[in-house]
Each structure stands twice: as structure tokens, then as C-alpha cells.
Image 1 (cartoon, rainbow, N blue to C red):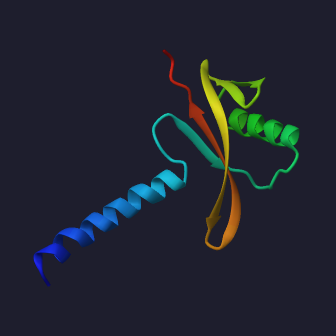
Image 2: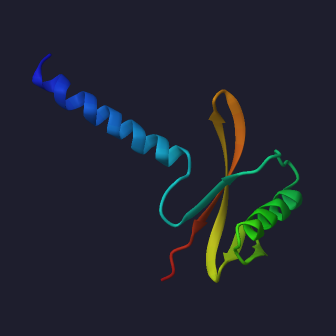
Length: 100
């Protein structure tokens, strides 16, 4: 094994973990969850998100246009479709907006 293999292999592994974390929607200032059902009707999806947030003990309101107020902070709704174990999953990501 040469020195480049010793350096590049761990870097590739760490980079892959960060990339997976990014793809899965995880990160600071985000609320991420998967619902039991796949929603194609946007209104039903929004109601299911509000129910899940309430179940998590959060106070949430939908303002429209993909914008939520959760525990007093603004969030933007992002829908991700990810492949988990060969099964396509509808992932809900709520990203906290930066307040300027």
C-alpha cells in the first residue's frame, strides 16, 4: 500500500458520509421525517405534515406557498424522493429560513 492509498481511502469514506448526509436532508436547522403514506395531493400532504409536527410536540402553521411557521420560526418545505433500501420514499424536509 502506498501513501496515497492511506490518505485517499479515508478521505473518500468521510466524503461519502457527508454526501449521504446531504442527500438524506439531514443537517442543522432542518426538520426531517418520513410519513407512512406517499402523498400526491398537495393539500393532504400539508395536513399530514402539520399532524406529524403536532405529534412531535411542535406548534405549526402553514402560511401557503411551501412556508411554515414552526415554534415561531419560519421554515420552507422541501419534498425529497430518496431510495432507502431499494424502496422509493417520500422524505419531508423543513429547512429553517435565515432571518436577516
